[in-house]
Image 1 (tube, one colour):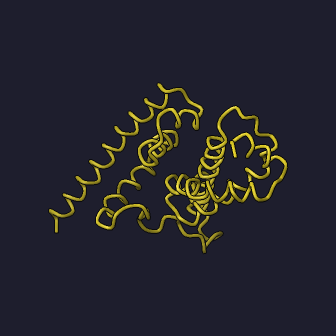
Image 2: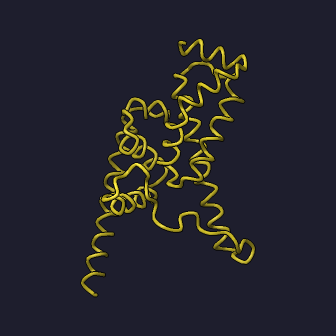
Image 3: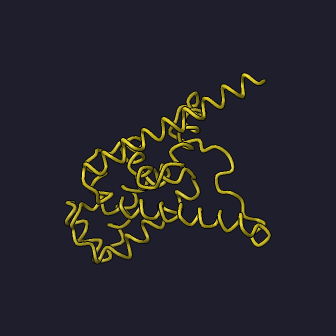
Length: 195
């Protein structure tokens, strides 16, 4: 089935076509969300929300990008919305801890990506923490290209940015990560020297 045929089937509400779409995109959508959110439960929620949105919005899909780009763009937006809500809740919790006493910071411990080999889990956790502290657009560009392995062209289309803008975001993200990681390792050396 071609992409155009699939889109037509989806727009007609064909359930087997939607099931096929979910089966074929589930893992990639989940990993896109996971790499951005660094939280397995939130990534599962974002993936489900993505497919609900695809189902509800396929009728208005105009084909201005490929179907996969459109789906990933929805997944990225769902993940970024979750980050914004998380940050708002964390701010509110700091201001009014008595109002939301059962609220916990969503990133209690380090994030251990399931795709990272066991011997590299600690280093990856430090890197993911550093990535999380980047400004949103830098974090997104770096995650899509350097973590997901997308091409610059795919990331540009997904982010709706030109190549120069994305290259600039990657350059700034690298510089910021180097500084964050250098500070982290300098502090570790100081802590180890003091013990």
